[in-house]
Image 1 (cartoon, helix red, strand yellow):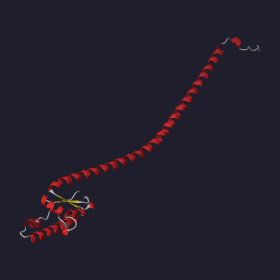
Image 2: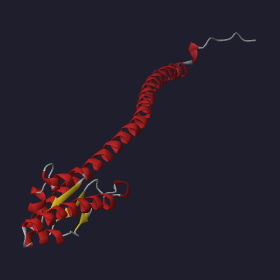
Image 3: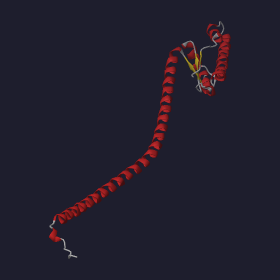
Image 4: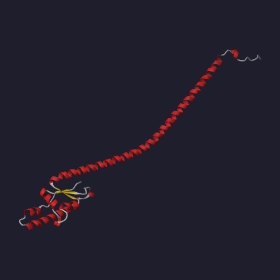
Length: 193
């Protein structure tokens, strides 16, 4: 995901350091600046490809602290931005051996943060989906509860009516038994025919 270029043009840097004459060292230093700019541009065009899944920046590994210091202090044509500024404007970050791990650790933390954001977004979407499902279950469940309450009320009304009916039936049955048990005198006598 994070492009890291580890090839680096050192020939002109060495010549600028080891040159016998001042003019030769200055020319080598200018050539070194041009080499670095070309290398930055090549890294930018070759490796920074967000559409292919890379980050929108690349790391340019500078193999020595002295070379890194030269890049951080070197200006383009004597005035203007340093080579490091030139690189950063093009989303290419120069890193020295000491800084490489720090940059990679920072990028890793940033990527973990993005992962957490994505996970939080997914959880939010799932919670929204669950809320919609809850609404689809909650309304019918409420209706079912109302129906059960109505059924319970109807049952209680019917049970009371049945109790009243049973009490009346029992009363009628007791009266009928009482009348049947009464002596025959209670029955009117029919005249003989």
